[in-house]
Image 1 (cartoon, rainbow, N blue to C red):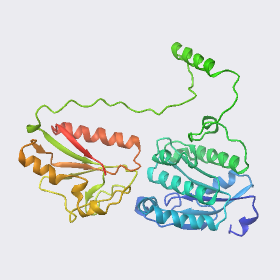
Image 2 (tube, one colour):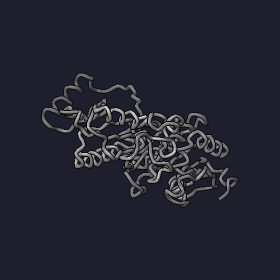
Image 3 (cartoon, one colour):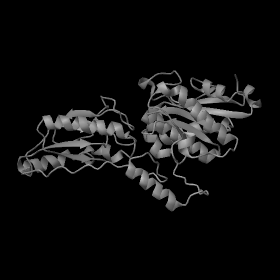
Image 4 (spheres, rainbow, N blue to C red):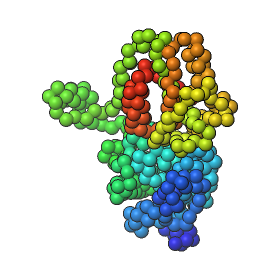
Length: 356
């Protein structure tokens, strides 16, 4: 199935996938550089089948999740050149399910292709994937389950949206079409006035009946602040950072973005962070100065001075670190619970959290 053979098909489809779905490898191959293969690879075969002869996957662009996250501009540019050369009518990216780095890459390349090439783009993600928040307004994202177990439903959902876009058919509301809301509201005539509909919703709510608001608001967790430290001079203070400060070489392989883990490291013998033993691996900011002096992100040096002055009791011997950029809310909440439990067991009185 060569590129020439695909030229006479109605729609030219390009598919973007990561190293795992291309069969190249898992995390050990996450640094795989952008690559173009003719025809479909992996799940692209089903996308082509779902077009029922009206389109063909003329090429598959592959890139490792780690490489895309750590070299976003270079990866985006290389992938766009490959996509552009195939003269596609549409780009499908993923589905990424709840894989954060994959979601970021799918969303980023789909948004870029839509903007620069002027073609429809479609991806698929679990609603909590960090790629949703970043790119749902820049590309269509079909709602999927949280893992590849939902592939059989994800691909038809993506394809149906893609076909509608290609044929210029009217796209219905997100909840009916199966994509994540893009923040777009369309005006239309309704048989009932807004006042009538509002009263009906209020009555349904009072009765405990089901109803659906016409303007969904974001939900934010309300976390009550902890009580103040009673005696700071005797308090044990812990250091925690989402700024990506890790021992040189990143021994626990914490991801540069969309983190799924955190690290815990002994600083009991350290007076400050030095570039010889610590570095930043964060993928969301310019790390130059953090790698010259890691204390600018995790202020161990200043904390030691305050400890010696007796401002507080002592620094907890273990510090915790991860990367915050693109990290799924569910993972961040898990990190917080687990770290909090460990600190509580260790008798820590308070923690200082630093970002970037």
